[in-house]
Structures are given as structure tokens and as C-alpha cells.
Length: 471
Image 1 (cartoon, helix red, strand yellow):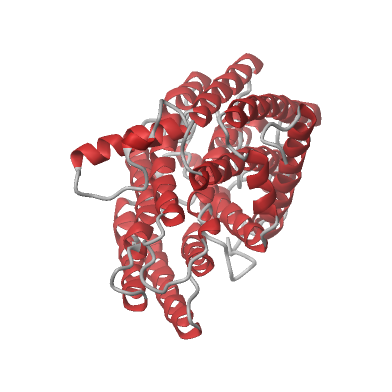
Image 2: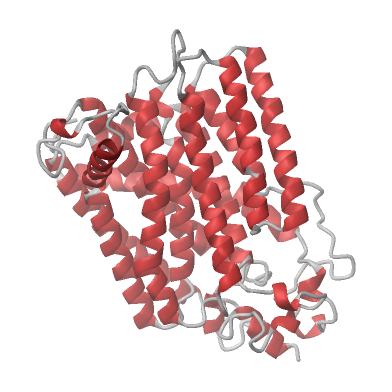
């Protein structure tokens, strides 16, 4: 492939990216989303509500017992430990007994974190603090297995910390805010200002870790074989998670004008962040080297010729090309998953109360508008393809081997395994995000409608509409 592919080649690459994202979307639906359709909602959502008035919204739920029909559920803490256990094994060539040792530690971590989540709640700050202990166990396990000069265990702590930072920040947000998403202007503000800040904070932490694991030849230690090509798994879960959250907020816009503004602001933000990713990393590294001059780094500031990438080594170009490819695929995954969820859950809409249902005159008796949902998907797809082509033009001129990186990724069996695991992990995070969307701590009880009328539920949301409908 030439350094400057034709526009036709770029559109083919975009088409292939969409096909890959469709695969990941179907994996999410089959592994996580569709099985949850058979999970009844808890009693707090259903007890004492007249089901006969709302057979569409409550289809196939066991309101008497409130029990989950499957004894096994995919939670984000299960995904958390299984994902990073698999990622470590892809990166480092362990002996079988070492793999088993790390597996036992990962299972221990899952059990401890699940107990904390059950005791304190999924969005509790205490849960976030407890979740650091199992990740420390895994780090200690790597210390026992790897040689003394290895720094892998220390670097792998950062992705754990980034996820826990997200959990703590979101917990504080839930505990200090008023009604959740009270207006579409609030959602637009989140997309324009709040989400980009947290997105870049989480991305930069995981990208820095992946960069060191990928580019530092001494980081694994003496005589340790590693596969630096799989480090994209460090940041892929974060990319898909944030894409799902942002696309989930976009689909909740009922006003077409606000939806269009949200898509425009999202695309502008995405374009600016993608085109300056290397520049931001170099600036962060310069600041770090000034604050900690004794610490080693992958690239010193003197190696950066100008603001952007014009004369850096081939490995770094490959690394950032893989990051940009994963970013593109993540956006398409989020679009398809959110759209499919709207259709799949239209008969159980209270499980994922997206406010797009509120646009209907009576969402509890009428089917969801196909033209409305698919129209929103088309607008997002068209705008995303435009952004991708524009970013490709810029990055190819800078020397990024984007198309070669894509071909290299899809030729690896580990990529599809990692993509599937990270997609399910991200979906578990998004599911927790959606289901924590209303502040119900102060009005908890056996009836979710105790939180209606300004006591925790979104005044313009689907749950509030449901409570009004069932009065």
C-alpha cells in the first residue's frame, strides 16, 4: 500500500471499518444485550404497578418474584478482571503454571470486588476503593512471576487507576447533582465540555501506558518475550465505553435541532482531538520531563521536530495509527449498538430507559418510530464518515500508515478476541451508566415511582412518563 492511498482506497478502508464494527456490535448484542432481555426488572421498578395497562413495556418480566431467570449475569466487574487477565496473557508469554497463578488472583479479585459492589453499591466510592486491592494482588502476582527489572506490573496499574478514577468521579457526580439530565441543554453542555475533558483524561492515561508497553524494549525485563502489537487493548475498552456513553446521550435528544447541534459539536471535538493526539502526548511528556527530569521516557522533546509528527521513528507512527484505527471503529460500534438496543428493548424499554422513546405520543402502546431511529443513525454515520475521511487526509500527509495498521490489526486473531472482550466490557460499563441515571438513594423503596415528581427521576424522562401513565 502506498503512503498516500487514493480516495477510493480510503473509502474502502472506511467500509471495512464499518464491517468490523458490525461484527463487534453483533457480539455485544449476542453476549450481553439480548440475554438481558430475559432478565426481569427488580421489584422496585414493578411492584404495585398495573401491568394490564402496560403489557408492551413490561413484556416477559416476572413481577411476583423479581428474580433473574439466569443464575449468571455479565457485570462490568466480571468483565474488568477477565479482560485484563486475557490482555496480560496476550502481551506476555507465560508458563502454564504462571497463567494459572494469575487466573486464581483474578478470580479472587472478582469475588472481592463483587462482594463490595453488593455491599456498598456499584457506584459507591467505597466500592472504588476496595476494587484497588484486587488489582494490587494481580500486580504482586506479576512481581513474583516477572524478573526484578520488569516494570510491567507498575505500568499495568494505571489502567486500573483510570477505571477507578472514572468510578469515583461518577460516584461523586451522582451524589452531588440534582435531577439527572433535566434538559437537553444540559446534555449538550455535557457533550461539548464535560465529556471531552474526562475522555481525554482517561484516554491519555491508558494511551501512555500502552505507548510504554509497546515502544520500550526493556520494560518487560530480562528474557521476557512480549507481543507489543496487542497493547491496543489497554485503551480500546475506554474508546468503546466513551463512544457508547456519548452516542447514548445523543440518542436521547428529542428536539431535532438539539440533536443536530449535538452531532456537530461531537464531530468537531472528535476531529480536533484526533488530529492533535500526538501533539498533546508530546506536550504532556515535556511537562513530565521538566517535573521529573530523572525519569526515562520513550521520546525526548528534542526528538520532536515541530508541533506535529514529521520526523519520529516508524514504531511510533505505527502505534498512533493503531490508536486512530481503534478510535474510528469504536465510534461505529457505538452507533450500531445504541440503535439496535432501541429496537431490541422497545418491549422492555424500562431496562434501558433511553429518552428517544419519550418522543412517541404513547411509547408504552405504540411501536418505536423506525424512521426516527434510522434517520438519526444515518445522520451520525454520514457525519462520522466525513470526519474519518478528513482525519485520514490529515494523518496520511503526516506519514501515519493508517491503512497498513488496519490491515495488520485485522490479520491478528488476537485482535478479534480483544475487540469482542473490550466491546462487552464497555457495554457493561455503559449499562451501569444508564441504570444509574436517576438519583434514587433518597427515595428508595419497592416502587420506583416513589422517586417521581421531582424526587430523583428525570422530569422529562421515560421513567417519569411511565409513572404518570400508570397512575
